[in-house]
Length: 205
Image 1: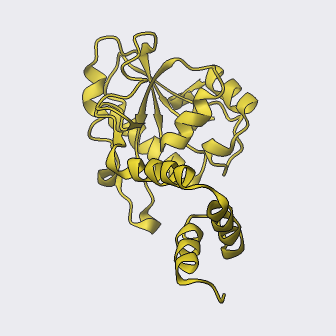
Image 2 (image 1 turned 180 degrees about the vertical axis):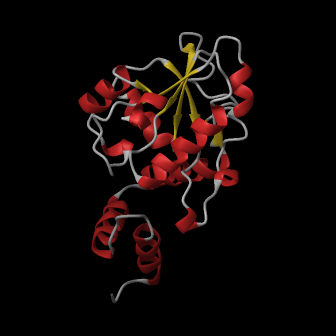
Image 3 (image 1 turned 135 degrees about the vertical axis):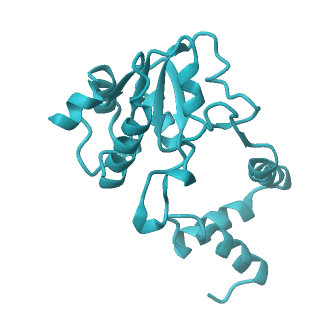
């Protein structure tokens, strides 16, 4: 493209985002060029704040504005249940169903030997101490029904199964095998949460 150096630089940065091609990036950048200085400053400030002020919850590892996220600090949430998910996109998907009022634990990924990701690369070590929380009665393994998701769930089942007073459950198979949890429609995902199964029974079936 025969562009201004500044335009070219901006297009390259926007095109580096996943799913954004150069043509789409150019359209976005040209739209930004039309905006007034105040709008651009708000846009740049919002992006800058993502790195400077955004953090991760010290309890569940969800993205947060504070040391403890708004879910963990909410007294209205059901502290007897922890839903284990891969990342915050799964939290957004589950919250959109309005069928779950418990807490979460974000692993930060899933076990994938092909990608060099093992258990030690995930937030599993910080999940174990949460088993001692007095109110905890159930852990939901809400992982995508992919090979990597199933491998991770089985590892957690073996790791967490020694806590006899805590029920380990998983989502019912309303979510299609091979699909990522975050892409399931709200109705299907909501039903899968409500109709969750004991993990041991699920793997036997």
